[in-house]
Length: 398
Image (cartoon, rainbow, N blue to C red; front, side):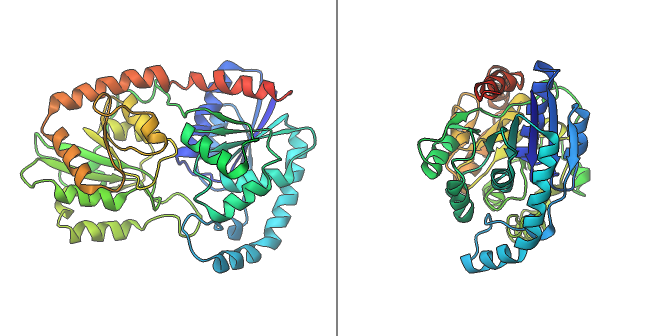
């Protein structure tokens, strides 16, 4: 089997971590398979994929095409203008992509990211089978929803990261599309309760926490809907007498214009809320497992339904108590009160109450952490990925 994976980004976000986990799982299960990764952006993904034994093809996307997207909203007219500006370079890049795929001659082309779903649909070599790996909701993206609906007859199958995403794909692309739900996974040898930690206070330029302080962190990309503002408002609602240090861990990673919040604006917001003295901003940290272990509580604050919530699974694997904005795929993978505390998305008061409850109850933090680790071992072990993806590939007749 020869498989070509196409990634629109070279940086490491949730979708890219999921791709690396899939590569690792397939390499262990099918060592004779030939795995190729086409990386369209700058960043560490190429090196990480090569370390897993994949043949990497660096294939930079034109800047105008890289920045094109509808994640940040905006008018149709403005988006159309950007699309027209990107079209000449984009068509040349597509012709080159078609040539690259012909030279690889894969049996399966497995795409990561909306732009790559569309690009592969337009550049597929003959006799190859196309698989879209859907990590985000389609219907919320007006232009991409139209594009995927238009090309819905091209993929032989789609992989959705949750039942919620699978339902969304069928609504957009039609009930006739084959959609398989495959939850994301976690490297349980890396994401463990024991291991290295990181002095988050030093990264944030703050003094060490006083003894007894409970560290609470939002670990996320700077995506507009990741709920940074909700998290900050929640921290501001926690009584001053409770010993808490909050951290915002993450930085900008995507090139799509208008898709991320400005970290400087978040710092200004923390100051305006009066919590600058107990809220640190670390920027992007490569070792996310060490970050999890450095926190007592991990908060997931997405304001929109979460397609899956990889950070939730990773925090559980590290034995950390988790507060979850329970909607979409995130609601599928936690049980409120048993392995996490669930709140409604966007409800800063409810989030503050959940965080405050965990600050004051070390036994509850420990119980949730133990239960989360057990769930991760049962449901999120990345060895499962090959067991689910290999039969899918084989069923395509390759």
